[in-house]
Image (cartoon, rainbow, N blue to C red; front, side, top):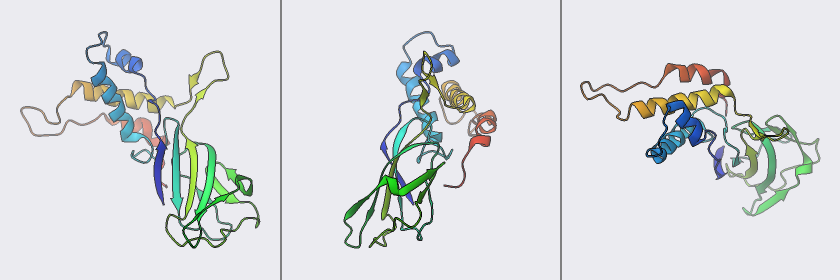
Length: 198
């Protein structure tokens, strides 16, 4: 399985939040801080990150080999918001669009409904099935003001990483050639939410 980012996410931590965390009141380092937020987020987010989840809302495309008849496909990088399209390559490697109504979505699993759908004449390529979907933590817009659904522990971890990057701008100390460790608190915050099986 291979997953590609079709539409990248917007930042999940704003420049204002990062500056408030750092207690920075000037704008001279806005570009630097924005880059640090992006770097900390990329360390965790989506296919490029090591957290196993989509943080900001993004469009992903998972590519699988043909599954056994009726077998579910697990979409990586939860939380799943919606499945946008399903297609597969036929034996001539031509794209065949599947009908979303032929599938049941349960959590992040996608299963052909009963025996009504068969990957007819599908290619044996390892990327024959292509599922495009939106994943991430969207804002809750049910109230007067939008509220982020990103877990507080993930937001705090990103801000701690930004703080570490801001204070330690070199990879080694000038006296000793040792790496400056990131906060162990970051691992403690995200570990309960980390997804290992992808």
